[in-house]
View 1 (tube, rainbow, N blue to C red):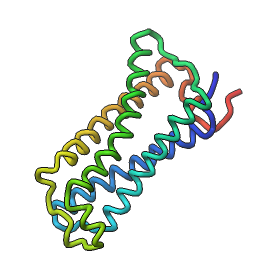
View 2 (cartoon, rainbow, N blue to C red):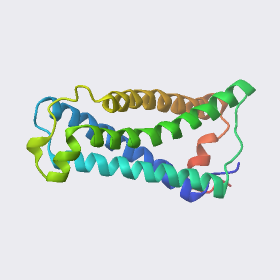
View 3 (cartoon, helix red, strand yellow):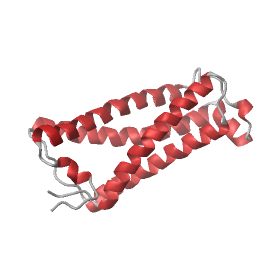
View 4 (cartoon, rainbow, N blue to C red):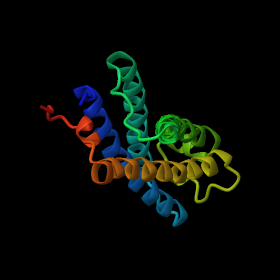
Length: 174
């Protein structure tokens, strides 16, 4: 069975690891902001991880075009459409999340606090910051899409038993 290129596999799993970190950091940062205990370092780390996810996503799109992808292994045309669209929406959300994050910085007191290097300027709440609402909703959409992605992989691995998950492994398949 054809596999993804090594660099696609590495970027895929690295993106997952950083997404988990970004989600944890963002959740912790949200709690700290609500409690008035957010730090500049918390924002800087979250921004850095989010920016890295964006770079990895763009590189993954580049690698997909350059290296190609194995054919879809869906049992019906409907599942092929679902699989293709889940991937399309995953990439879209992975690009929009950092864009909304930057928009939050530009449309709230976070940007001024970071520029001044003064945590006292950090917002205590994000009232009236539309980008923050969108950012949070996109996180929810990302979670739903990720669950669909994982359920599809589980279906292939344990129900269809077609070895689909081996395509996203660094181990060469015989």
